[in-house]
Length: 439
Ligand SMILES: Nc1ncnc2c1ncn2[C@@H]1O[C@H](COP(=O)(O)OP(=O)(O)OP(=O)(O)O)[C@@H](O)[C@H]1O
Ligand SMILES: [Mg+2]
Image (cartoon, rainbow, N blue to C red; front, top):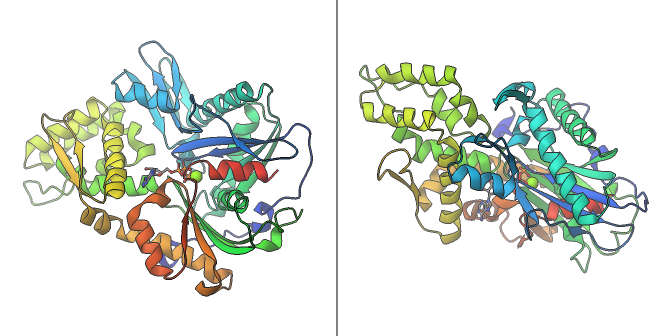
């Protein structure tokens, strides 16, 4: 990793290949799919006219990228419905942060679902097939051409694994029946959506802070530019770093909750309890591995490392009753609540132990997220530097993606770019709309 953990573009990475592709016409129209780490959204555009978001769950235009395999009746659930079943305590398996597995060897590993062994790649396909089905239902016809979003880097500083991640996603998208698949960088898609609202030419730093990655682009946008077939010269720079809201969740979980289960707890010989289990329990896409019999057997052996055995009992309760996602969900909600209200938020951990609670205050957020946010802001700075611009030549910083709403992030960004106007955009639908405009 380079300074600040920021990544440089991988060798052989052709940024132009992901810039604005030439316009192609098709009577069939284009479907933009924003397959996000935390949430997914889709938008459709015909040959002409404005793109529109597709309702995915009732009226909701975005849905959590979540799959729940119900162990009681063997049914499969998606999005909010998946989370609802899990949070209500239905017996089964929850899968979240599936995108984080792209580019990792874990993608092809299998997991036991009911009587079957299923790979994580298969689970991604199941989710994408549902997106396709819902788009088909909404449009009355099966879309053929899709533009998939991709982060600037799926994997930092490893071009081979990054290319593998895109290839795996392409394969998954094709396997569910889309025959024409192209990719667009997520921050460029966000820029194309923002451009629809502009009345004059502007140079903008577009910031897309999601669940898994933070992506930046400096781009020239405007009503007179948007109809040009070739927009490559308008993209002045792109950068990205593999840090997002799920990393904030992990950091806050480790700081505020995991110590209640023994993280950093000193044992009889003044040695800390081995920390691996706490890191994995606090990482959305690794949680379910801790429920495997082997992992539980290992956790049992940690008992001798504890001085306060009550903490070990809590750890065992979380593993055997599978409360890891529930805790991660509580932490995420506290993060959002603390940011929105600028006040302390409480986390209810009664499932772990009667009356057990944890808190998250404004100062905790600032302290524990400081490093991650500093690296993220440094990546934004690098983008502007690569574009060869000074702050004075930026007309605005456009914010999109759920994590861009985080108060501490906005404060850190504004402190770095003093005097540049922050414009808050669509948190969850902008990338999908921009992908459709990338046709
Ligand atoms: N109001 C809020 N304040 C802070 N964070 C928020 C807020 N609302 C949502 N989030 C966070 O935003 C993240 C999800 O954002 P988003 O849906 O844009 O990500 P994504 O597109 O799924 O991820 P990626 O683009 O990285 O693949 C989650 O980590 C969530 O906790
Ligand atoms: Mg996103």
